[in-house]
Image (tube, rainbow, N blue to C red; front, side):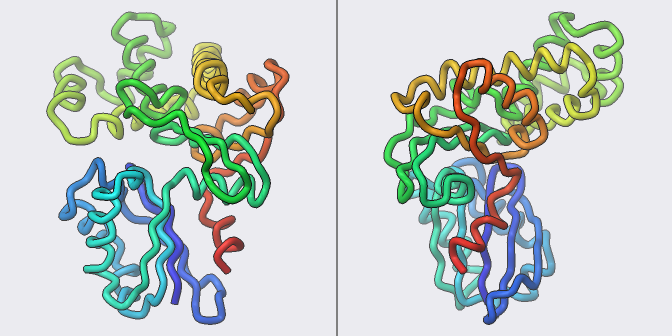
Length: 279
């Protein structure tokens, strides 16, 4: 059997195929970013899904696409975790950016971006990633990502820039207090995931003008600062992968079209499209 997986900091989506290459299962487990989690945590995140463990010894090939694997040491750390669970499998590990590129651009050139818990981008020539402006973590980058929007929501809450009713709803839904926020940001190992946990508030209150303006502000920043750093950004289609891009694609497309750029494909999760690539 074959496993194709897309792993981020928040969750991992797995597709299982039988020897006839038919889909026989779709599962979710915890995040597997090796720059965020230690091996013990990654093992526990996989083990939370009993169905994956039940089939572990029957898996012959794993195609794992993950965030945080550009560094060789991080990639090896994740490979060791996978090998300890899937002891009979041949394991191939690729970056989440390559997953996004293969799932959206296919065999054609394009600028490909991830807008999920974090954000990233690359120039893809139809075969491989040719250029990326690089990733410096959620403190310096991650514009228009879930954790970026979460940070803006918290800032607007504490600076009282949210409309009064929205502020009351935000406080009630997340039981906001400064001690809790400070502890979660500075005394835990996953502050980026904590920040991203506020992003669903935007979907719940999508009709609010405040939320719409926040979305436009984030996407405008991403397009004019990150994508504009690529020489080809006016010539190639702009493809996107990730929950933020998918759920709020109306606002994202409006910003793209406002700048006279070419919209491409937007997918929430690349796993389904990756099946066609590998099978």
